[in-house]
Amino acid sequence: MRIILLGPPGAGKGTQSERIVARFGIPQLSTGDMLRAAVAAGTPVGLQAKAVMDSGGLVSDAIVVGIVADRIEEADARSGFILDGFPRTVAQAEALDRMLEEKGLALSAVVELKVDEAALVGRITRRAEETAARGLPVRRDDTPEVFKSRLDAYRIQTAPLSAYYATGGMLRTVDGMKPIDAVTAEVAGILTAAVEPAVS
Ligand code: AMP
Image (cartoon, rainbow, N blue to C red; front, top):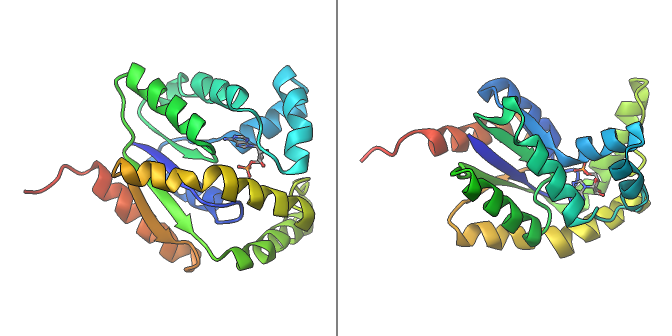
């Protein structure tokens, strides 16, 4: 099963991905997590990505596509994966299509979490507060100012992906404003239907 989870920052992609991992036994490939790990490790990719990430912009397609191409080659991703935060531009989506085609693989589903943008700043502020309360480091880009830039990047560069995948007949939309468990149930239903053979 190969899945893309789409949605603006703060829509709950990370939370839902974790639940899909637990339920379907496929790894979560989060480009945000991979880039943060590269920044923390001070790798060449991390050094290039850090300033862009801190400002809420998007890291270059070439860097991100390279990271994903390497990651999907790893053994745990052979039987499937959930992509969280990738693709984020039409160029990335096209690169992913090419990567999968070269391997004779196809996507199972693209699920978009639709959320009320006005609610997102509140969500992200709560996420930062809860993380700090648990004594964990807060993401540097989870401030209201940087979050606004991340939302702008989403609107301009990522939102067109809905039309890209709708055209290919892949897109399924879920109301991400529902309670977390209800969203999970809906996403799981879509994924189960996507991998079950069609009943005629
Ligand atoms: P995320 O954890 O998905 O919110 O990503 C955090 C930050 O990492 C984003 O604001 C971008 O700067 C960068 N990033 C993550 N995924 C991508 C991607 N697919 N393309 C470009 N930049 C990305």
